[in-house]
Structures are given as structure tokens and as C-alpha cells.
Length: 326
Image (cartoon, rainbow, N blue to C red; front, side, top):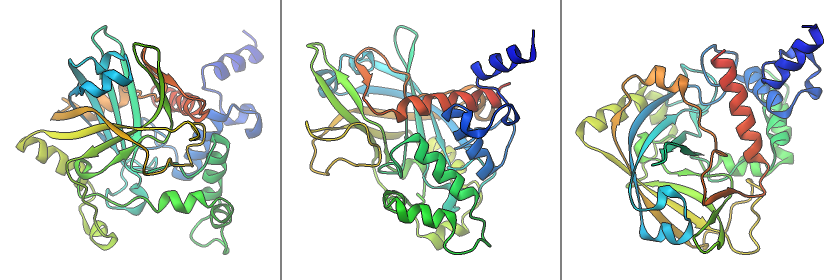
């Protein structure tokens, strides 16, 4: 096998090294993971982003209204087992949970369907995404990497944020929760529900707790480094944690391809059902290494919208997965 063939195979597998090609010649998903590594460092065995997390398990039971919107098997009214991962932001696996950099927090859910397949949602505590495209997210990350504490003002990141007002607006929607169970999580991408009659409805996901409790910055900074992880385990010993899985319905003129543009608050929201978490995974550390959550891993009755970020996220997550599981 020639060197040229080896390189071609590695690129196809998402494993090409940065020295193989100029950055601008690499696929966008490679550029994104490399940019994340540039900001947060390389930590073997961990995700490039949302590196620190905890895996728990439970079930989902849909509401009757969900079946009217989508024919997907998870909405048929039966009890659907789920695997859930909560996480801190950044690619730093030992980041203190109370750090401002740990926001936004993530929630990924894998629904284990009756036919043996899975469908995923990957959501976080941002109410909308800071930029519109994968290319802009790459540029945001690169601006961060070029803005150390001693950088000349305005920094590259400050300049980027000034030219992209959705960046400070999005980051203004987040805060540190007192528990993963007391945080609300949102889907930044739009998906399309298809019901048994073939009717189509664009939606964005919401996962809402029984109570939302946020800490002020001074309080968050004094908490133990792993307080969110430890609190969730202690809470589950006392009883289950529940979330209300909901769908915000798009109107005909709402954009479905720009994750930086939230839909108006007056859009109808339908409860899809209740997600119940009742136990920790047997070995969370090992479990999360094997788990790959993909926003584009769908099932009949749920389709991708015209938002290209869904495919970009899928590809970047796959690259990150291949690197932590060589």
C-alpha cells in the first residue's frame, strides 16, 4: 500500500493527522475537532468537547399528544428505556463543575427502541446556538484559541463577538445550576416530525425539570470541583429525577436552518412525555467512553430539517469518537 493510499484511508476514517494537509483542506469536521483541541488541549480517551460527564439510566413514556405529532416508536405510549449523559462544557476532563467555562451544560439521551435500534437527542442549556454555521463555530473556536489572558484588547474573540451579536446573546442565556436535575436543556437544531397521516411539523426540543435553580457566580465558584456529579448520584439514592420532554412547534415562516435564531416565545409548546431517571450507570467512566450520541441518529417519524449543522455535528462527534477510541 502506497503512502498516498494510506493517507486516503485515514482521511476516509476521520483519522488523518494535522500534518497530512493544510487546515483549510481538511473536512470541516476535522477542522472543528482540531480547533477544540487547540482551545482545550488534547486529553486522550476523552471527548473533544463536553469531556467531563456522568451516565445515568431510566425510561421515557410518551404523552398522547406526541403520537399525534409523530409516528416514531418512542411516542407509541410504551415504556422506552433510556441512557442519559449529563456533562460540563469544554474538553477539559477535570474542569471544576462550578467554573463559568463549564457552561453550557449538556444532556444527551439515547432512546432504546422496541426493535433494538436507538434514536438520540443531544441538547444543552443554551437556549440557542451562538453562531449559524459550522464554519462560524470553527472561527469562534480559533478566535478563542488566539485570545489568551494577556492578549491585546480587543482580543480576537472580543472582535469576533462584536461582529456576531448572537454570540453574547446566546452566552447570556446560561448559568451554573445547583444540580443537573434542576437545569433546562434545549435543542439548538430543528427537526421534522411526521405523523401517521404524513403531516409534517418542524420542532425544536426542550427538556424541562420540575424546578430550575441557578447559582450566582460567587456561589458556584466556591462549590466542590465535582459537586454536580456527586449531587446527582446522591439525589438518585433518594428517588427518581423527572424531566418533561417538550417540542416547540414552528410556524410556517420560522427559519429551520439557522440555530442562532430562536423562535418566538409565543410559539406553541407540546409535552411529548416524561423522562424518568432512576439510577446511575454501573460504570459511568467506562460507559461514556463507549457511548456515541448523534443528533442525526433518527428513526421513522423524525427527520432532519434543512439545518446543515446537524450533519456537521454528527461528523465532528464521529471524529472525536474515533480519536478517543483508536
